[in-house]
Length: 209
Image (cartoon, rainbow, N blue to C red):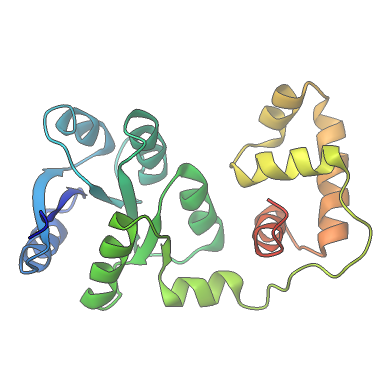
């Protein structure tokens, strides 16, 4: 018999933590092995307790869930992360995935969907809550064939997808911020995107990244 999937819950609200623990521990293949109330505490906990999956609340105090996910992945690359949130904001979803999260689930989702997200993440698959997927991808078409992106525009787009701001992109590519802005404008036009997030989503769907 396979060992249960070891889970770390990172959630600052005790009531939510208790509910998650109770639901997860009812499953024979899942076991909550540790809990933390903040991203900082999670980093400390994992120094002494191994876990396969971390369920991380995006709205943590101090270090937020996105920052926590990025740091957890940096220190423990094999750790799988399920982001848990009350929101389905497109920017928040994309920032979470860019930070290294493997799954994104709404707190209002049916319990079986969270179990599905945990199991999918543990198996090395990505998972996006159906309601979130509909909101994020709804109406987003792959770009029509047209003027291709230049190599430099693709460089900028990759860094956008990594969550970098214009100033950070400029530093990474050793170009001016104004040049970055020109590239971003051209990318939006070519991909027929309304904003940076939509451009990144379209590029991912089209296999450009």
